[in-house]
Length: 140
Image (cartoon, rainbow, N blue to C red; front, side):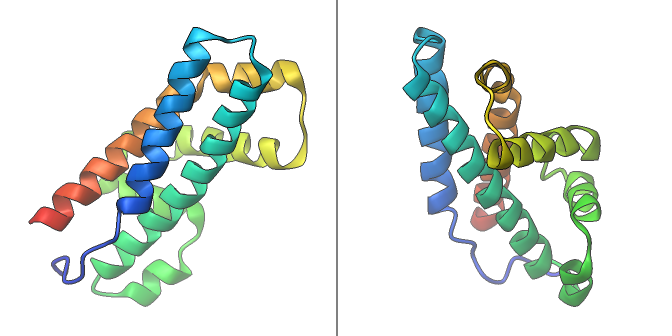
């Protein structure tokens, strides 16, 4: 495996993670506020998209065969990232995150949205873990 020759710009991930945490904290204070529910969902979508891109970038720049990483399907990318301790959870949980992300993109049901937001703490922990992993990788 190659050393991290180029530093990943993780400032966007940090800002997104902080913003996501802020929305989740507000939701815990006022679960009836639809604007906060919407903010949590929007920030989840953004963090999901950004984290998956960062996973792929990290794996590509640390791989001896970046073209192999580029050709990998999402499920294998997640498994590879998990094997490197970049993730807390493997594909079983990430498939749920992906399903939730797809749900938020294609449909909206208020009861399902609230149920989804109630379960977002685990995803926040995952994104925060990714951020810390990348931060530590940048520092070594």
